[in-house]
Length: 395
Ligand code: XLS
Ligand code: MG
Ligand code: MG
Image 1 (cartoon, rainbow, N blue to C red):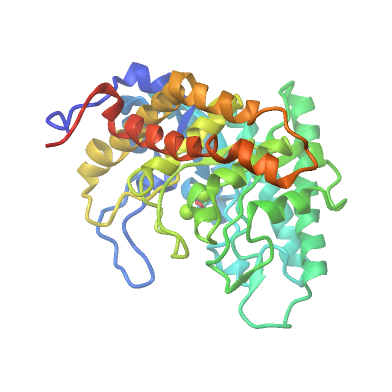
Image 2: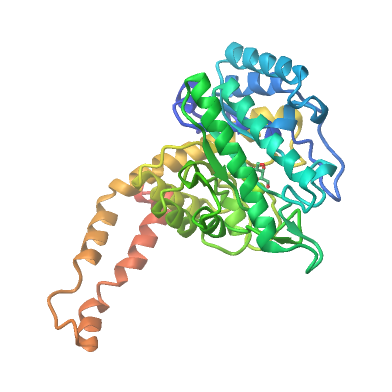
């Protein structure tokens, strides 16, 4: 890593609102066809390592750290107290908590199953997560519904299932309002996270756009408390342009939280480290977010590869992901202030000149030469990405 160069200091890294999830560092390399390649690791060590690297925030699912049978009980609060101590000891803050509603057998039919007792249990889980979140001082709660969908067609009724899912989100918001008031804290930002496929065959809220529609559907009692946590790869997975998705979420005022990673179009959720696959697209995503003043968390929701050792997780995987993000963020600032891109953009916006707006031929003629600037801008972006604008050439 030191031979690679380009590392930022932990102090510099800490200036960014970057969070490291418990589950990302604890991931052991397992999958449907894969046995684990790394040993187990607990929250204290992960929080300590994040603190050393300079990842200032930590995020977790409830059951990443609390056994299912302890949820809501005294044993939970003992664990939460230990987490609080670990965060204080290592100078890390908890930014976000999320309820796991996909892994345990109780979610076999999803968090909004037909059986009322499953749905009551889902409400208990999201309310309990709100409690844990307030105790740990978070600002955000995330909900990836995961198993909200089906394997076989016609077995579930979609409209009822979505209403029932809204009931759980409504329960979380109502409980949050009450708890925040009691604790004298602000309410949390409740963020829905979409994924187009996996772990169900068909997903009822597969994209960020469908979630925007769900928030605006009238089913939520507090739509103003609910926004999105888009994940970069989850949008790529259905073939979308992540930057266009983020633009739509920004326009709706709902970009609360952002899961950052990388991967491939129309493939499964490979959760590769940010910028390793699509650095140019990532640069452009960050240009959009910087120019719109996004100031929420950047959550490192990636999975260190199976080939990376546990030593490598903290020596290579996390620091290199953070540093690629910071470099791309700084480059995005350079793009925004680049005189060539600015001049080209201004020229495009000024248009081709005063012509008769009812004359298609005249409008086309006036713009024909001007539109070459699109390709010039694209060339300039690649120059900035590769450092070529600084005079670097290959022979
Ligand atoms: C899974 C999701 C998950 C959420 C939190 O694909 O990305 O990790 O971010 O439950
Ligand atoms: Mg995610
Ligand atoms: Mg993912």
